[in-house]
Amino acid sequence: MRPILSDAALDTLFRQARSYNRWRDEPVSDVTIEALYELLKWGPTSANCQPGRFLFLKSRQAKERLRPHLMEGNVEKAMTAPVVTIIAYDTRFYERLAELFPHKPEARDWFAKDPRVAEETAFRNSTLQGAYLIMAARALGLDCGPMSGFDNAGVDREFFPEGDVKSNFLCALGYGSEELLFPRGPRLGFAEACRIL
Ligand SMILES: Cc1cc2nc3c(=O)[nH]c(=O)nc-3n(C[C@H](O)[C@H](O)[C@H](O)COP(=O)(O)O)c2cc1C
Image (cartoon, rainbow, N blue to C red):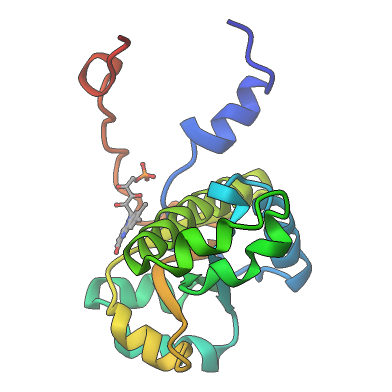
């Protein structure tokens, strides 16, 4: 087996990358945020549906709007992060499919006629896009602090009052500080988590 990426790159993306909750006092530029989206957007989604919507909270005022909806334990790690991303999904993502998946003109109706399938597809694929965001951020030298401890309904009322977009999870972005980082948790071994049939 010969990996295409170097050991150093694999360390950056996976083996040495941690989830951070303390941050160095170093801002993240808008150019970096845009570069991040320009990478993550290439990750695959079913029928190329791209339901993910990304709100990057960078200003103090924007983060203050998030504060009341955070679980107590997440307040400091979110409020001190240079950026907090709300990874959300457009529940009406299928309205863009004629443009995004043009070789199957009937694709819109697979979802438009079945709200359960539409919701499941939007949630699954926006979660994937959130994972692409984490990996893209690491590839660009950023650190991540993903969080699901918050009140989704409250965040949706505050940031997506039109009702079409719903929050999935949050991801703080910045340059992590090792301070208060607990030792890395073990991962399940191959034999525990996998089977080859
Ligand atoms: C979707 C998701 C939600 C998470 N939610 C929280 C959270 O609300 N608060 C928190 O402190 N950590 C949260 N974490 C961080 C995890 O505990 C962390 O990623 C895991 O323990 C692995 O840590 P490591 O990357 O440092 O090895 C979350 C991680 C993910 C991927």
